[in-house]
Figure 1 (cartoon, rainbow, N blue to C red):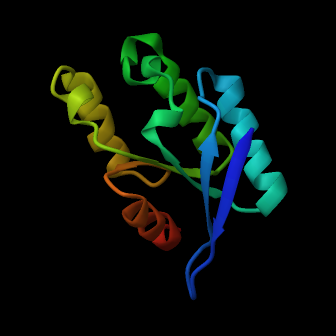
Figure 2 (figure 1 turned 45 degrees about the vertical axis):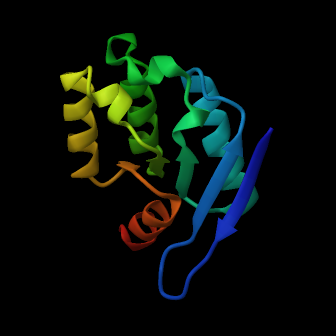
Amino acid sequence: MWNITKVETDGREPVAVVSGEVIGDVLSALDMMATVRYETGFDRIVIDKTMLDAKFFELRTGLAGEIAQKFVNYQVKLAIVGDFDAYTSTSKSLRDFIYECNHGTNLFFLPTEAQAIEKLGATR
């Protein structure tokens, strides 16, 4: 179901790097979040963009907003890793959403796993 790798670094918050099932709805996002918290106690999660159903990147579906709100509500930080140019080149709304998320404190879109771990580990 979910493959969880614990990443703990000196003086930083621990981070869970998760792979596995595709997150296609809010319930699967909540299931992943709950599994990580139960198995690790961590509240910082890194996933690859391939774990998200394509409709996540179509803002009109509302999926991105709903999932983002759940992470905020449960005070879990999420970093999504990958190249988002294919999505943002055709959607100004998504480009703006990613920009706003990256300037916030709970949801980040970053190019590499190493950058995601660094960002989440340092974020309070």
